[in-house]
Figure 1 (cartoon, rainbow, N blue to C red):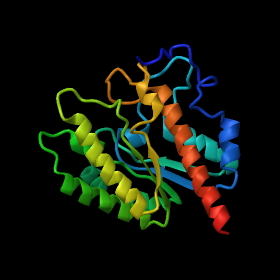
Figure 2: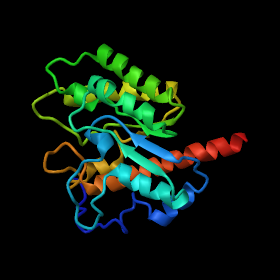
Figure 3: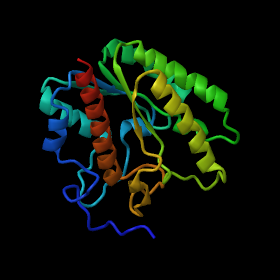
Figure 4: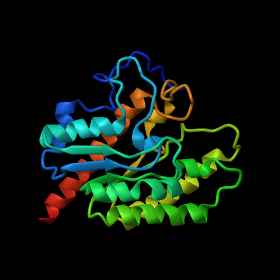
Length: 228
């Protein structure tokens, strides 16, 4: 049975880092221009959670990076409901014009909202997004979808998510993206994780995703430091 989490706050949540600690982990971060593209997951959409700041994960990460580089510029191009092909059509030119040095790219969630998803087409479109984003010279980041994200009208939803997550994992490896794998993160077991729409992580989940992104970026910086 999932544990009751209503008494948690951002300060007591074991899966959240205090901002000062997060900034310490990224103390050597070189990034000055942070952008996100894609859908509502990339946008950081979610309902409030008692005890947590009402901020999406990308705004949280931008705030952490500004502690290190006060002049950091943050641009969120993500659009609610965007499919991968819509992302390609409406966001990539603006991303290129922005000239990012770190970019968060989507993982195909909205491509699954159809009777019969075409996984080959999803893989092709996502590869284009990764390739064009990487073409800016930026460090890429991405998520996999969590298992708490369930759409009852599709009985095979979990299998759909597994397939698109596998595509995302492969592309992340191909393009040296920082992958935050949320599929089986323990936060998925919290009964108050999701917003009222039962799709998007509420502020609690946004805080956890931001922490996991900071940890992923810190791992990248540490690996680079060991190679120098």
